[in-house]
Image (cartoon, rainbow, N blue to C red; front, side):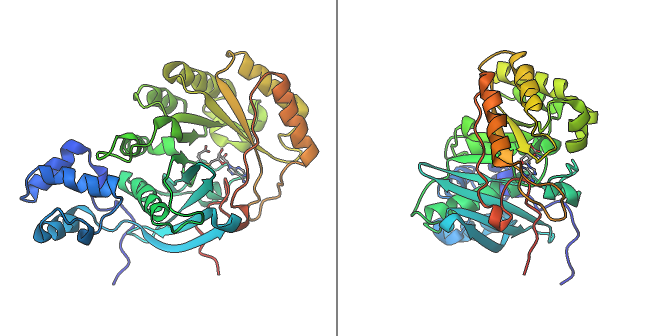
Length: 363
Ligand code: SAH
C-alpha cells in the first residue's frame, strides 16, 4: 500500500460538537439519540469498540463506528520509567506522522502530557521538539484520542498502581498549542464538557502552555473555559529571551507578562511561569531578582514560578544548573514573595521529560 499523503486526518466523532454529532448520525440514516449513546460509550466508557456498545443494534454499531470512528492513533511503542508510574507512548498518525504523549501517575492524580502539533515551529534551541520544525497541526480528534486512549489504559489497570482515573491534562508535549488555536480550544471543550458530552475534567486541571503568543492568550481568556495558563518565559530580559525563545522578537517579555496578568484577571486562574534552568545561561541570581520584580510589578498572588532543571537534548551544549545555583534561584524568587516549585523531571531517562519529545523510534 502506498504511504498516505501527509495531511488532514479523516473526520472523527471527537472533532464534532454535540449538535454536529447528532447531524452526522442522522446523515447516516440513524435516529439522533444514537449520537448520545455513542458519546456515552466514547467519552464515558472510553471505548470505540462496536462489541462494547451493546445498547446499539449490531448493524447500526458497525455502520456508525465505521463512519465516525476512523482509527487515528496507532500505538507503536510504550516506554516506562519510575517503576511504571511514567509511561511515554509513541503514536503513528494516519499519514505515518509520529507524536508522543506522556502519562505521569502521582498519589491522588494522574496527568497526561499531550501533543498539539507534530514537531513545532517555535525553534527554541534547548528543546528537542523545537529542533524538528513543524510537520503539521494535529486535529481535535487526534488530541482527544491521546487522552481517551491513555485514560482507558489507566481504567484498565495497564499502568502501575492499579486501575485509576485520569485527572489532569497538560499541553506540554510536542507543539505550540496556541499556534493550533481553534483545534486546541475544541479539544479542551471535549475534555471539560460533563459526561456524556465530554470527559468531565475540571478546567483548572487542564493546562495550556505557551511560548507567549499574546493575541492568542487574550483570545483564550475570552473563551469562558478557565484552563490554567503556563507561560514559558525562561528569561526575564529581552536580550536573553530573544535567544532562548525566538518568538520574543515578536512579543517581548513585558508584553507576554502583561498578557499573562490579563489572563489571570479574566479567569481568576493563577498563571504558571515556566523557567528551564540552564547552567550559566539564565540561572543568575540577578535574573531571579529581575523576574521577581517584574512579576510583583503586576500585582500579588496572581502567579507562581515553576523552575525546571534543563533536560538534556541530543546535540545540545547546555546542561542543567548546579544544585546550589538552582537553590539560590528559588530562594531569591521566594524572598520576593513569589510561590515557587521546582518541577520534577519525570521520565528524563526515557526522553519523556519536558522538551525531550522528538518521536524517535530508537533501537
Ligand atoms: N510550546 C509550548 C508547550 C510545550 S513545551 C511551550 O513552549 O510552552 C513544555 C515546557 O517544556 C515549556 O515550558 C518548554 O519551554 C519546556 N522545555 C522545553 N525544552 C526543555 C528542556 N530541554 N528542559 C526543560 N524544559 C524544557
